[in-house]
Image 1 (cartoon, rainbow, N blue to C red):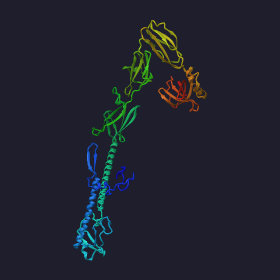
Image 2 (cartoon, helix red, strand yellow):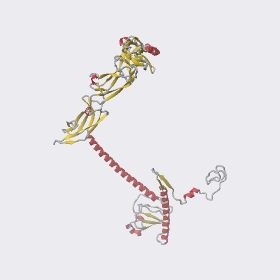
Image 3 (cartoon, rainbow, N blue to C red):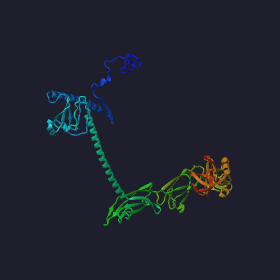
Image 4 (cartoon, one colour):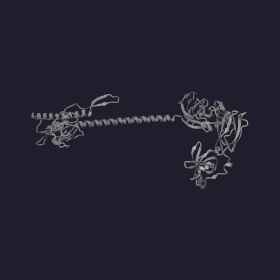
Length: 604
């Protein structure tokens, strides 16, 4: 109820407002309005449902409909009870049955239900036990021959039973004579029976479904097992030191199995015919094959005693097609800047391979023992010079590598001699250069003995380059001519003295004093190319190309870490766990550890 003074809502039974205390008006009926609306007989609630397609369906709630039916059934049963009572009273007035006696019914079929609803009346449901024969009245002896429902009247004063036979009928229950009985019991019984029937049906269907499922599974499993036993077995193998596959074809001992693609027959022994097939036979004759794998098929036939061939299931499997190998030595990358007209490209292939350089066959330059191939490429001063290497090795598919050699475009030609070294153990090296006759030349890097006698006539001049530090030394040369753009060459030569000279000043790093001195003066030792010798095991690699590894130079094998980069000219590849004697010069630090350039490597 809403307070007329403050507007707050209160219960209708309260005399005063709970918020402001004002007196609430009393309604004529204390019954809430919502209870009155429940009995107005309005139509049941309806629910609007929208499916996934957006269609609207309106339908009443099934629970409300069921509740209304149960209420109506209760009312009908109550009216039936009153009607039965009225009929019994009228029958008693006509003398058909004593009016002061209570009616008790018994059925002739046994069941499981007994209900005591009222102390004054007893309802025995269908199948309740019948009264004992000794309780029957003597003048009703013939009643034992009749079948049906026996009705007993008990005198309310003498409690003496009276008997009367009624026609036989089969009913599930009897309505109680007590008018206060609500009539819910029969509905509950029907509902319980329906649930029991539904559970039994569900159980039977489940059992049947499981039987069908397991039966089908067993049958299919047996079929799969039989098919698996009759299926050929394909495994990877080696034949003549080459990749191959071994196929085991099941059959009966003594049978001959002919393979169409191999043009060969095989005898079944110990239940299988063994077929070995080299992988390369499938792609040897295929030109320009580039796929990594290839699906192959064998067509087997069984030779019968009459000479006929009975086809068998096809055998299909997949093979890997190896690629021809190309290991590039020079240049280190697929793109390089060059300053000479001739550049030596070196790479390693499998001996006996077919090699093409820009579609020109150079297979005759491949070393038959090592597979090393050296190609002197002519590099024009036009920018990018592209060289494509194609290699086809036996039993492999073709492989190709494309190199880009970049040479700065020049208006004034300036070329080093083709025989100019890229690596030397000499501290002074003679360099020959050719340029435009009459041009002005200048050597910007350390040098001596510049000879320009033939410069004006042939454009040739020479000088001795001097190397002031170990490692890469850059030679810089310029050529100028009036009206033309100056040309410049920057050429790198790797200089390391031979081992006899290089190792004379080497300090051992296994001693703590030398190691501590190197860590404390790493900058000074780097500037002066101090040489050290490390005799230790390679603990692990930081990089594989170039090779950079960590060694523990201490005598205990776990102290004095040193990082060394492999510049060895002996083409020695380091392996983790191997012991080496390495000569190298200081380079700097790496992750807080001293770093050396390893120039010479020997197994220790």
